[in-house]
Image (cartoon, rainbow, N blue to C red; front, side, top):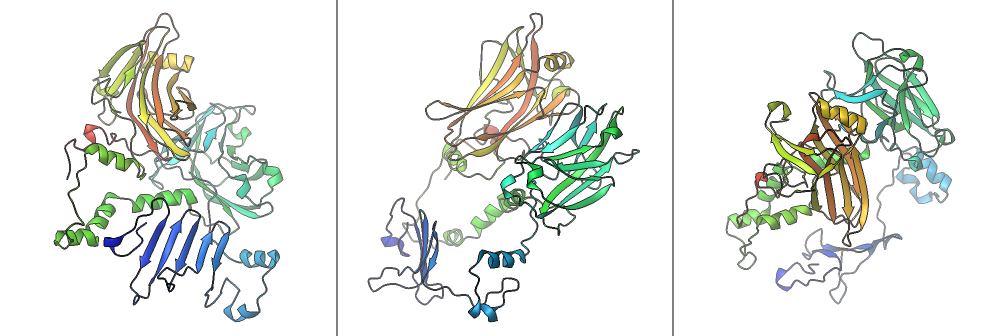
Length: 517
């Protein structure tokens, strides 16, 4: 709290709050604002003892002001000339006024456009192994669409995908909602009837390619308290057929009957997109270079004593960056093994082999695979303990590539082993969570030539101080060892996978170990 506009007599009250002041009495913005725990206050004049005369307050119990200035009140049909005689004390009157205000369309489905930037289909899941989800590009939507491919099915084994993150409490019974979906079929085949329901409430079957819409009245009794969105196709249509596909560009669920036909991001996606646009290296550099203190410093105008030489090491810069969450930072050290096999990593005794695979067929993005091998009837483990503090529940995401050969693949499919695990630890070494990633899982994307990509979202609970990552290779046969190659391992904050990059602590990140003035 800098309690005065003059730096020479500033008073610091630690942990009390922040006071903003404009002490220039000739300024139209003369006044002060205080922000502290549970309250803010505004003043535009001072008392006789030179203290601020606080007149406007905001607290958790409400907003208070000595005077409310509103030159006109024009909430839709409410005109200023009726303001003097307005009686809006009842809930009914307030509700009627609000109902006439168009607050704009809000999509209730996050990750509703199936861009290749979201290869994990967060919030979506499939019902069985009778069909697959994958990404394909299209001329109409270069970012990619969701491809739903059905294998041989019967009426008793339908394939269904479902979205599981709808908020039941935010949905209003008896209100109109509009569902919009954009689909098309693969070339040469008739577009199947794409059926959609929310929980137990059937919405419609969309048989035409392109954009389809349906407005309906929500029945919360029918949808149930755990309202998944289900997308499926007619069972009779698929019975006895194999390799049939259809594609979904996007799907939106909007309250009301005025939904646009184009895709609308959810509030979460829009905030993330806005943040990505605003938080760029160019914007940060431009802001700093255009700032008055920076320009004054270049011109030699800063008063002596306001500046001193500041030295920071790479480690202190990293510590500061740790407190700034702008997304896209890799927390796994030596994640491409470029510093050697056991730098930042530890192994158990059962890990029989550690070696780099130089064969070009094992490389992705020119990054070499690191092969983990174990003896028969054993499990080999590579592990890394990552120090990271979570003051609140935080979404994070793990991604990596895995390379197998034909023999390994056969064993993987028969054993379905753990290929990685995550543990969260607090200051008292208490286990807060454990997550296992198996070879055969919905978090796996099949690539080609024996490559797989795994993208696993998880939540770090508040109080976590250390994240433990284990890469695992196992064999349950007395006759065979097992091996697999791990590449480009990454753990990031948030729910979006970004292109792999080294951790900021790694030498290849560009930070130098020498002092920076």
